[in-house]
Amino acid sequence: MPSFTQDEATEYDSRIVRLVPGYDLLHSCTATQLSATLVDNAHILVIGSGTGKDIAQLAAINPTWRFTAQDVSIDMLNIGQQRFSDLGISERVKVHAGSINELNDPADAAVCLLVMHFLADNGDKKDMFKAIAKQLKSHANLYIADLMRPETTFERDAQFTLCQQLGLTEVGVERMKHNFEHEFYPLDRIRLADLLDETRFSIGKLYFKALGFSGYVAQKR
Image: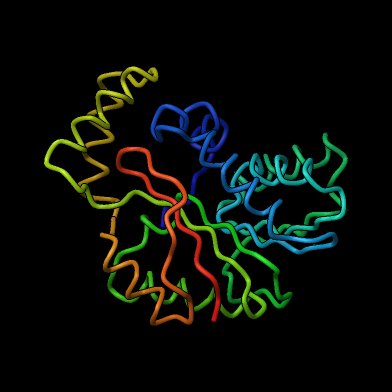
């Protein structure tokens, strides 16, 4: 899994909206479902929390929710911590730099957006799902969104075209194509369902779809 450092961290928020069609809508759809399903004083685990943009959005929904912000990138977490301080929500956020397995504070829900496609399906994805399940209370929901395998022969071409319309340069498109081939490990829907079933989750229910990216909610059994 990559560790976003220096310029990759500081430029992440401005770059990601050109790489993921519907990025802001994905986060809004996730946030509203958490609002519909969680009560006051809920604890939310955010995996790959990065610059903390999603936690800032969730914290504004309910002033009693608390969060664990997990990431492997110190630079990204530093940006997040500054954001939390500016918003006055630092006391509600536990920041963890390192493995999910090191945590010991069961959560009422977990959010894992645009993280899992960086892990190869050689046991790494399964280990990640197992680690998340251990950190969740029974019947807690996991919201996961990732790059998926294309379902049509033209889906990837459409992605690249739309990303250019969103402001991605030709050089950026070529880099994106390279990453799709060499750095991302997308699943199809059947394989995702198998991994969820093997790691104590229900079959994921689709709640977001924008070309190559899909979001699912699955409940811990």
